Length: 100
Image (tube, rainbow, N blue to C red; front, top):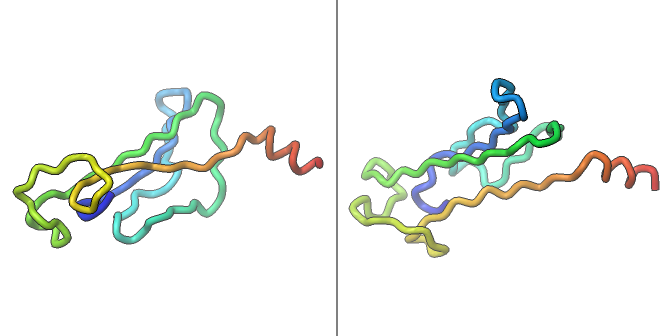
């Protein structure tokens, strides 16, 4: 996200539809580039991690260079993108490393 990023959130979705819980709190975009949880989240098998972001292309966003411009995906600052990177390890793999 570049100049129009407003919010960014990761959420764990567990296999049971009613057992959804946030991995990390919603983040105001300008306050965090990297969000590290206080402790590692342990997810059940077949869990999913959803990433949701919102943009503000209005004149109320003081960082927005041109609210009238149609914005496309792109790597340049005048374009926008949203990519949520997640690092993870399997519990079994971590246990094997500790034994060695």
